[in-house]
Length: 104
Image (cartoon, rainbow, N blue to C red; front, side):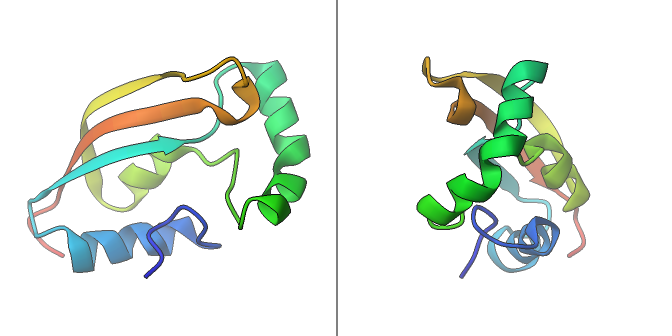
């Protein structure tokens, strides 16, 4: 089952997680790399993403993780973010917890 990482439609994958994996009102614990906050890094993420997807099994460099989580009807309760290595192109991570709605 796809869970969002390589899914061509991350919003649908997020709803799939909400409806099939997380119980109504349950918690989602997430850790994912995504869009960087620095304009120059983001510019390179956008340039490199088509190539990156081909060499990394469909992985995307430039997905807006918090936005995708919220769009999937989760409410972010705790969010941390940071570059995890000096290879900034692919190392800006988001991690935290989100709560699902009581209805699926």
